[in-house]
Length: 103
Image (cartoon, rainbow, N blue to C red; front, top):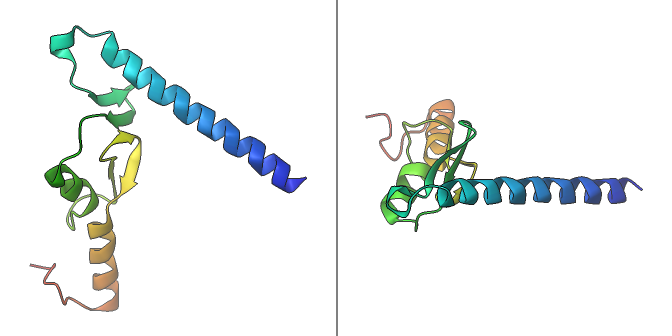
């Protein structure tokens, strides 16, 4: 029965994510074509970015040793882990600085 409950919760989360994604796309489509940016925040809280990902944007959001732990997704809705910051924290806590991240 526990497995069935998890499955129901998982489906609920997927539907919520789908509804939020649809709402973000809908909000962009409500703008005149020349004003659509395909990135922003839903309800002023949840970031979204539906632009074609670039290497620069991916690096900025996934590997920024001096940025925050969580950044906007490279593509899609929500947040992603900044692995560069995580790596920096691990290096500092273990006393290693092999990559020269401390400057």
